Amino acid sequence: MSIDTLLTARWIIPVEPDGTVLEDHALALAGGRIADLLPAAEARARYPSAAEESFGSHALIPGFVNAHTHAAMALLRGVADDRPLMEWLTGHIWPLEQKWVGEAFVRDGSDLAMAEMIRGGVTCFNDMYFFPEVTARQASRCGMRAVAGMILVDFPSAWAGGPDEYLSKGLALHDELRSDPLITLAFAPHAPYSVSDEPLLKLRTLAAELDRPIHMHLHETRDEIEQSRKQYGMRPIKRLQQLDLLGPSFAAVHMTQLTDDEIALIAKSGASVVHCPESNLKLASGFCPVAKLVEAGVNVAIGTDGAASNNDLDVMGEMRMAALLAKAVSGDASAVPAHAALRMATLNGAKALCLDSEIGSLEIGKSADITAVRLDGIETQPLFHPISDLVYAASRHQVTDVWVAGRRLLKNRELTTLNAEDICRKAAAWREKLAAQGGDTRS
Ligand SMILES: [Zn+2]
Image (tube, rainbow, N blue to C red):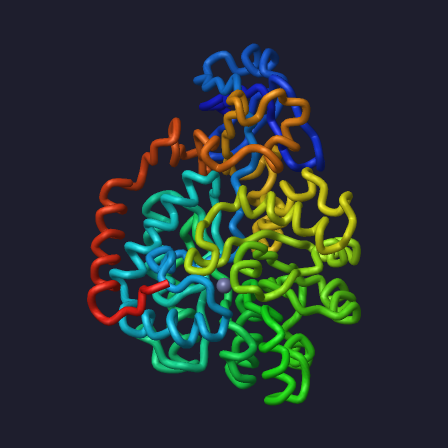
């Protein structure tokens, strides 16, 4: 195999094996994949014709996986802060979406979100929003990896008139993107309170036929549980179990309200949980019992949720919050140690999206989805343990370079495939429109 690039670095943290830190090693890349991982001196001797890029003050880590977001909602960042979930959704976000969401909104919002995520070291995001074909197209165009959600809700939107049309448009998208190397598809029923049984049963059959994962908000708030008890006579997770939706390719987002029996049920089903700590904190939704889930053997990944409820798409910040919050919630300072938090933000995310054979760790054969974090600044001195610094001290502003499938999307903090100026100009134009024409953008 002909090695085209050697990335040598002070530290390489492959995430698998867990907790490993390799000093003065190199990643040898060929055709967008990791072809070798070995000491830098050996790499130079073995691959003398490869172009070397040296990262002498950096840690190379797998690109972060944002396992749950609504990318285009980046345009709604800060429009209605400090409100509980249902008031926030029904009184502010949904009316704004009904008025404004269309192809142009989703295109400009997705670009804004991707620019932010790439600058924060994120290489893959799992999206749930209207016009998923637009987000998928923009991701493919700028070289970012994405899981496009085939969204399903009961109510009509600018994208689809009802459940059957959501499903048929999702399937058309699945056909269209089948051969795109960076985009995969997942079914994305919005939530138990917004999708009724019949469409969920249809979705279950399709997901099995097409072998696609399912990604859904679940047990986000106490109100959601109460409403389900009244409407269906049972808690939402029980309802999904009866509909036979839970399984290894099911990713349950939020899960702040869980009994011990439900944790056991999730573990037995093999489903993943996507923990969105900052969104849960901001909307006062509750606390996901991460330590208990991990102890039960559940795969826990990390998501930012949309920028309207966070308000950033900073997976690195979310990783730190997850590690800290798990300790506070469990009363155990040893819960979610730094290496486990890093794994949640990378390999566990890949697993939740059924992409762990392709991404999530720096292993030979996997795609070269890599993030370089500079660790020689004041903020991370003195440096005893690079994984500790990455999780507890560093910030996304220390991310300097990002590759997806070997293509460099961020070079020394400059975006190479997205135009930052143009994105900011369009975001400002949307702010004017939303603020001026009837949108309630008051905080
Ligand atoms: Zn969400």
